[in-house]
Amino acid sequence: MLLKIAVLGSILIVGGIIFSSQIQEIFPNTSTDGVNSLKSDVDSLTSKSIIKAEEKIESSIDKAEEKLTEFGHQTIQSTEDKIESSVKKAENKISEIHQDSTEYIEENITEKIFTSNSTK
Image 1 (cartoon, rainbow, N blue to C red):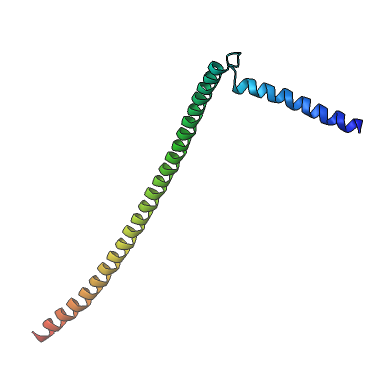
Image 2 (tube, helix red, strand yellow; image 1 turned 180 degrees about the horizontal axis):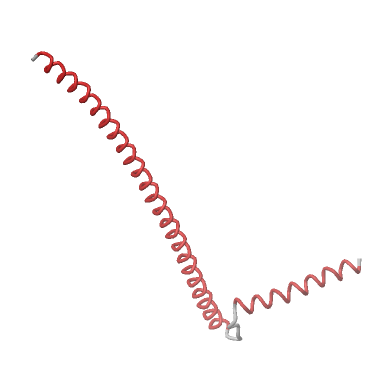
């Protein structure tokens, strides 16, 4: 029983020490004049909070900007690849049409030339 009380007492003492040092960090301007020190502490907390909020917002904006930039680059690259693929397909189709039309013209013109020459 005495051991349990000793353990609980030591935990409370350590907690009190930690808590008092944290209180001193959060409210560094504690003094005998409670109203002025409270105003000072609130002002200090407010400025720290504003600074931290600004930093969070700036980091969020930076991350969003990086993601948008990366997305933009990916979109541009994807569009370039699709355009290049479409151009190659169009070139192949034009080449096929040119070859087919050339063969058709050669066959028909050659046949008509031979037909017109043989009738003369």
